[in-house]
Length: 200
Image: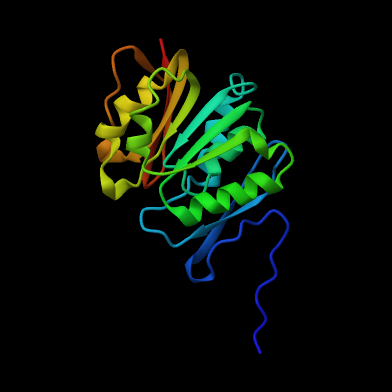
């Protein structure tokens, strides 16, 4: 008789029919914590290498920051930010299974109450958040949905005057930011262009 797989500490429970892989937090107080990645259409967690580069860029501003992670998916970006010193993070995810897994993870981690998980459509939620004053937002929607043009102005409206914005997109779909945003750093892999912007 086959035994069910043993869950390791820090692993997020996901429906067995959806299990497709794992990512881990790579720095900070929760380093090594694993997040299970189910086979959900459009779910494409940011790779360890890209996250390491991104959070090296963000290191000076991250402590105490208020963070927004829309299209949170596995939660790797928002939870990594909290692990590395952000004061709070709102993670918005439409898929109920993913959102429940993020709540379970936050409840299990010491200090996890700093994470607020919103289960719902990101565009609808963002429409009611103008002026929220977040310090940093991660924008990495499902590529096939083509949501950058709709999501970008809504995300920008939630950010404070000295905020930072991370955008991940295919090479041929890099969104145009408003003129008061300047490119701080960017990088590329075979699949994506990833860029960090600063409001000037």
